[in-house]
Image 1: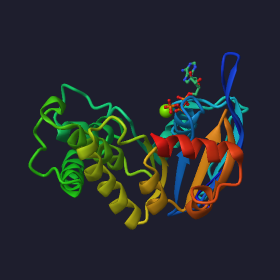
Image 2: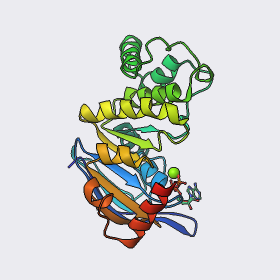
Image 3: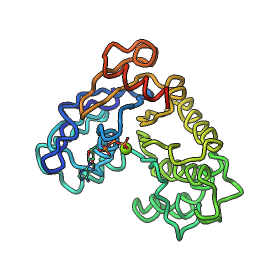
Length: 248
Ligand SMILES: Nc1ncnc2c1ncn2[C@@H]1O[C@H](COP(=O)(O)OP(=O)(O)OP(=O)(O)O)[C@@H](O)[C@H]1O
Ligand SMILES: [Mg+2]
């Protein structure tokens, strides 16, 4: 087990967005989260990456690290948690005034303070891996959406995380650019990365996922292999959601 999540709860003011979430993520497995708008998908990913602090819950990692959110986290714990996962955002979130290469080197160089030569080599190899070897010196506004998102993926990989998190990585893209980004994610899957992906691309989710979670109103309504959750959902709410997505 890479990560075991116990009883995770997160509220914003009076609004409880995640309610007693229990979840196991196995090493090398791909968990895909689907669910309606506002159901808490992004918030859950942000909790994994310590971008949000849960009100309660326990994370237990396979390396022995345990984080109990009912106690106040130390800065050291927050940093350790953040280093475990790389996040790919829906809207890319690149630094506009930095080149593709500088976007990728920023984390390891400035935050992790790793040696410059090593970081440059790593960043170049990651940009090559995502098919951008000839675009390294361009700025985000000079890149297509698909290229920007591939920089986003290289940037997340550059911190050498154990877990990759994707929040609707293709939903801001023109349809003809979706494929190139999904291909990079599939390559990572084949390399054995542990990943949590929020997506509305059900065909992609079906092909790539080991497990699908359907969440609604901050609860996990249904979970299981894609053949079960997508093809033979048991819960009425899952059926209705899938029907709506497929109609769209
Ligand atoms: N920082 C915040 N402050 C207050 N409320 C928030 C905050 N972030 C999220 N919320 C609320 O939490 C709920 C869940 O939001 P979240 O972004 O996790 O949903 P989502 O499932 O990712 O939706 P979408 O599919 O539209 O991206 C929403 O009602 C949202 O308004
Ligand atoms: Mg979201």
